Image (cartoon, rainbow, N blue to C red; front, side):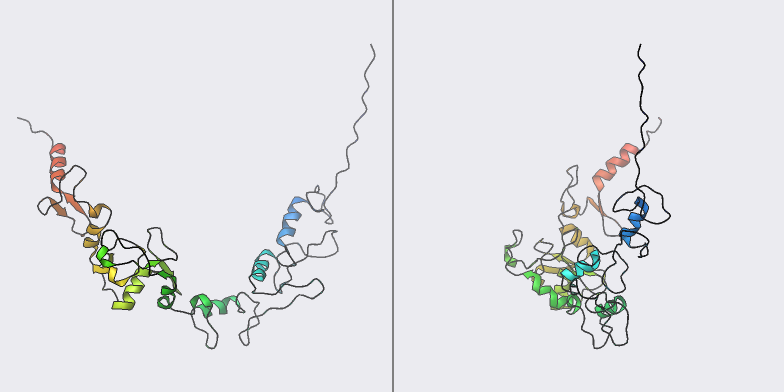
Length: 279
């Protein structure tokens, strides 16, 4: 019987990383996986020790790797918005510094460095124009996003058309507008502009039951208890889940004023939980 001879396989020559002293196998763009990830983040010093040289961002002071048109992703997005100028291939990188006199920190946004940009948002730098989004007060920016030709509420047609806020709303449906420190409710801003501040421990109730309505005549100052009773949730119910009516004699108000209990249901629960007496 003829014997079968096999020829030994010759191992293929594996390519290694182009970084001197690194014997790891090639992963991408003539680099191993660890050095490739470092090159993407711009953490490997540039030099002639490797064949593939990843150029840094053309923005002065930025150490991130260039992604598009000699800019990193952050500065490329700023260049698309017109905050910084695109660079030609034959020109040197331009230096962008803060426009405040005596400040040599790199440009962050709106011709200002990051510390001065945060101060300009609050109007704390004299002689520097505040950013556009914060140049006006909430009262001045409110009516630019209000539609005064809204529908007439079905529950109160006598109130007239609603003035609907067309901007951002929170998860409960109320309109919100940003300030230098936080966000405030739009209907509260509109009411305080027309009638003054709302007293403490009181809230505004929408008579039209449209939460993003900003018309001052559709708002009324009430207590939390009255607001809950007028609401579309449990406060607006006239009967409990067992059919007992919430009358003055059959309703127990919690000491906090934020809840109520059906006395008939409470008496029934007490009767069922009371242990039987031995005779």
